[in-house]
Length: 161
Image (tube, rainbow, N blue to C red; front, top):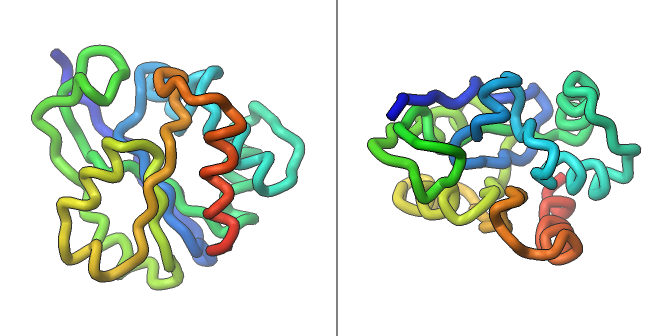
């Protein structure tokens, strides 16, 4: 089993919220892009919430984050995993989210993309006391919830932008 690592955070001077995933999947690692799997609904949801025309151009996707004050990162810095499923993650090492927040004081809330990210963040009691943390349904195609239900749950990020 290979050890995989997350990407550096996408964060901007004006970021107000942080969206945390668990760790990149195979397709994302291959393409060096957050949420690169075409069936993952992450970008579709964000573009719809921000009322922008959807694009598959990664530079435009990153621009959407900056324009809408959104930072993006993963809870897990590195781990061992066969495939892309979170349930297969082993021997994980975590990113220092608390340090990240101290370096980015404009961030006022964390939104977790899926249960794995949320449960990992909840383990850090100092962090839980420091900032509001929200659990959102995973945008992964493996999380079999209809798109409209995912979109509805994700609308809560708009209150922090």
